[in-house]
Image (cartoon, rainbow, N blue to C red):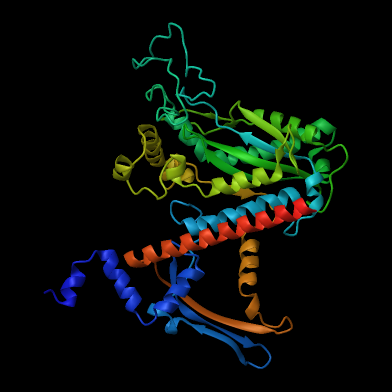
Length: 472
């Protein structure tokens, strides 16, 4: 017969770790920490203390120290937005994004409710073409039919008679990688921030010209606010979805003048995007590139309650919130972690097209004149180094404000009196991150339970609301 130690060694690493955790005298407290993080898949471990004193008397009002915690550490959320990295934290980030975007559309979170009456558009700006790629069609049409098309200089057909569905791995891949302008693609990503800045500057210029005002005079009358999200297309080129709103000069609390309508804003959006032209400095190896937005531009008005000719506010906010949690595995564009060398690119589980884009980032990133673009540091995102979601200052609230509001709500039962003047002395240091194998399994179970509980509560709330409305 095997003794206990020998039997334990026969178990898997996960099972051994689970037994170790459950037998720990601090297991209940550790479980409470994991639950408090929502089952975060990769929590941050901190060590330290916080002391809150009355400023007048020096009396200690509250003291917390991790010396009494399991492992003498406190676990906090990683706050990663990617569902592929941490699903629990990504759900919170998606909820914050929904409220951030929605507040700028219908009000709330310090934004007045009458913003829903302002001129508002949902705009999609795309990247230009860098070479023909295979495409999917909804009506069963062929990909790129070309009669007597022949072949390119690399011996590949310049047309494609096939019909691709959306799930075909060929969709988004170049017809000929040799003809595809990978350098232009990477440079466009590297300058995407400047392209957006040029577009927003043009909006003011073109709006001023349309209504017969100077730019400075227009600035004293209206303000353009926006929230935008970047999305990778199948061809791995970023395009931008943006909510654009027209306010008075001081922002959301100030209505715009009567002449400022959604139709006027839509017209200048189209002309402003078409007029963007940026040129890269001449490079002996690359020449000079002209950067612009693609010709495919979608501009649609927004209505608070939707309509046949417009989009509903909640639908737009939900779409943006859903997209910001996607990782590289969801978009099939790049990686979720940084690349340290060409060997990482060769081993990356991506298509040949993505690998070629990452390789171009690495090669171009070695040129001294392109060093400001930091292409090697952002090779895993194909040269695009902007945030997935950005907004103008006056559009709505901020992620920080939303997190603070949630934290205040969670500790509302332990708030100090409003008239208490306090001094907080905090000393914290980072001591690690992540879970052991057994802890990861328990955290995943807690996260799933919390998610299911929220879904059940949401369904019951919806059912009860529907019943109340129906009976009214």
